Image (cartoon, rainbow, N blue to C red; front, side, top):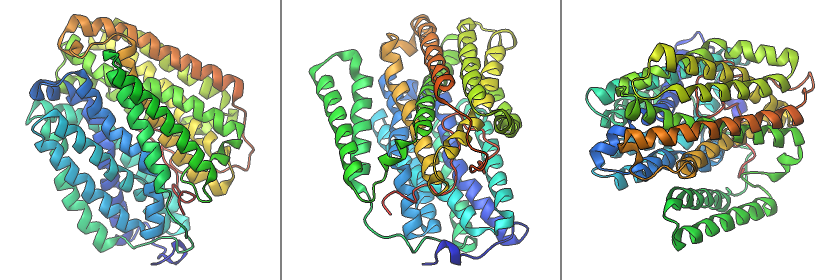
Amino acid sequence: MATAQESPAVRITTPTGRWILFTTVLGSSMALLDSTVVNVALPRMGEDLDAGLAALQWTVNAYMLTLAGLILLGGALGDRFGRRRIFVLGVVWFAAASLLCGLAPNAGVLIAARAFQGIGGALLTPGSLAIIQASFHPDDRARAVGLWSGFGGVGAAVGPFLGGWLVDGPGWRWVFLLNVPLALLCVPVAVRHVPESGDGRLHGRFDVLGAALGASALALVTYALIEARDGSVTVAVTAAAGVAAGVAFGYVERRRADPMLPLSIFSSRQFTAVNVVTLCVYAAFGGFFFLVALQLQVVSGYSALGAGTALLPTTVLMLLLSSRSGALGERIGPRVPLTVGPLLCAAGMLLMLRVGEDASYVGDVLPAVLVMGLGMVTLVAPLTATVLASVDTAQAGLASGINNAAARVAGLVAVAGLPVLVGMGDEAYRSAEQFGEAFRRAMPVCAGVLVLGALIAFAKIRKPTPDCRRPECRTHGSVTAPPLEGGVGEAGGA
């Protein structure tokens, strides 16, 4: 296998360069689209499959569970066995799972298929960026990454609109089935035009035990949170088992010579602090975006297309302004943006309390969405920059992968626990009155978590040194996690 150093230095203006960009953008957009469109489709899924709120929570969380638990391992597999090979495997896997999602006869099959879909996402997501960094000439690499992240952001913006159109038109199953023709287009292009690359210096065993323990801990805790409304002995036992698996994960990672998650990286206080801020911010985002899509349809009477389009300004603002926010953070330091940004997002969530029955989009929804968008613009780019600046340059890719996984874990826990915390019963989404009342209790909770994140940022975040590594992904549109930077998985299981 060719090492990263032996890979051809492709120029971005050549046909090969354009094909590489096309296939990596297409592949990563499949996973990005799927993470943004499913929330819009949830009410129709529940109605069609006769599923309660717990099943809808699992529909979202099964995907996030395997993606968050395996994304670091997916990056390491690409480095070891070939980035193109693992990327193609991820695309095929993702498409096969998407087909199963689209054909699912009941909620149980859909949830299982979503878990398999997350495995595919964990293989292809870090691989798409790694291919770009390994393939392009150093003089073109920054531009290529910028185009990759920019087009990916456009995909994130189109996602809710496209998802709503599909749900209202041919049906929610096409949200998943659409991935199949995209994969049929992506795979042949990747095989024909993308050069293989890897890192022949890597050796040792993969941290399969660590990955299994981490995923098991997340799965058990998620189950306990979702089913906590029952208050059964099984839930208590599952919660205890989840905590035990988490403790075992920490023990294994500390003892291994080549852990998936080197705990030594948390010796940087700034890195630890910014990841705690990430947990607060993306827990609030995860709960918000899960519930608001339901609120707009169940309570306010929006169509799926209307609900998806209603949230579009948030992503558009991030696409237009994230690079400027990053430049501002470099000038003034991350402390102010990471304090002000969560507070703006908290204000936007509190403005959502005005969104009830027959809510006006211009008068009620749009102001809240715009304030949310401005808050996200303010904080996301400085957050990524601070993560990279908090560790040695050699660990920057790993640090980005950990931060990305932390954000997904935060969203996973929020979607599992928030409905129970605010007293949302399993049938609540079928009643506009019940759901509306629970939503009004949930928004202050999400806002409070954001305020906590802002306070931690103000107390713990400091300006990094001037010679730190800067983010390559300057444009970002995803609301589910901060952008990945190159090198994910290099230290994990290598």
